Image 1 (cartoon, rainbow, N blue to C red):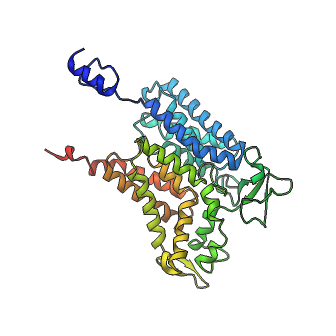
Image 2: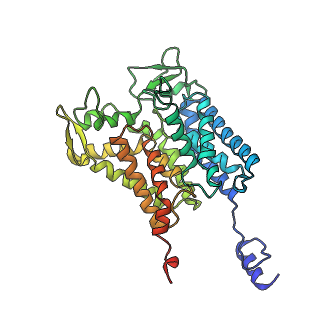
Image 3: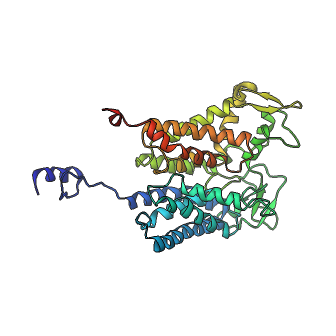
Amino acid sequence: MNPNNQNIAMVTGVPSLHAPFLHAPETSRSIFVTIFAAACIPLGAGVVFFGWRALFVAVLSVGGCVATESAYYRVTRTPALFGRMHAAVTGILLALTLPVSVPWYVPLAASVFAIIVGKAIFGGVGHFLWQPALVGRLAVTVIFAPPLFSVNLLSLPTWSLLAENRIIMGDAHNVKPESTYRHWSGTPAPAEADAFALRRPRSRLRELTMPTEHPPESIISTLRHMPPVWDLIRGSHGGGIGETCVIAILIAGLYLIYRNYVRALLPVMFILAAAVTVAIAPVRTGAGLAWQWFPIASEGFDVGFVYTAYHLACGELLLAGCLLAGEMTSRPVTAPAQAIFGIMCGAGAILLRLYLPIPIPAYAAVLICNTFTPLLDTTIQPWMFRRR
């Protein structure tokens, strides 16, 4: 071994046989394993609040993605589909976006679309344009919606939540509406049931912009019907399996940032852009449904900050910003481009949530912005590529 290779070995801790190459401390498989482990954190919170059926949906989703990718590889022999760990990552991220009450065939159908349409037809890992898990989620949202089905399987009027004395082992399908429900802690399960049927907090906030039978009188009147803030932070409210627990999502996101798999700039700009958009986007209240600009100040800054915080803490916003938008292939490369990408995703997610009847606004915003990733990479290049 020559002296240069000896120096490389001393720095990296790995013997180098062919200068001037450095041995990377991680492989693609180890990166995918780490991302999979991070995604298990919000999945674990989902199992607590939605029971064993959340784990069942995750197993179907991961198994469907791995089986689909394996079958596609056997037919096409696409080299970038040889490894299975990325399929498992796609499956668990897909499961986090699904409600626990979906039938068994929904995660399987979503897995097929995620692997084939979202990844395989582009050439496999490192070549796709859109986040594969979100491609599968969008596909089943369209397929299993009316008029094909009498009930929208993925945009239900009420969502299951296990009672505090039924966590983990309760059956989320054994559900019953509870008109006296106010908060999760200390509220026993309904008679002969394990779970409550509750409205999603995000749907109440949308009443401030979308037409309803009973228009809200004010922002504060809407906030009075929202769950307690601690329920949103803890995750004890209706939503997708991995969408509800703010603590678990932030821990997973911070861990990926710590491992340098995601630049902190992207999720920070995502969340900041979403907060600014909520603060200034107009809402309609009162008998005349007059538009009110700058809701953060229209009824006092205290009410405005609470309104903004509820928007950030409920729905799929944080999951999209911390785990899904930062996918390595579908995001831009440079830091300035990622900042612009995060701003586009965060602002777009709030605008779609407030003014369009889209069941997955944050996911749709990420997919739309993924389309502009090549443009951002071409326009905002590293400084060394712009020199003569």
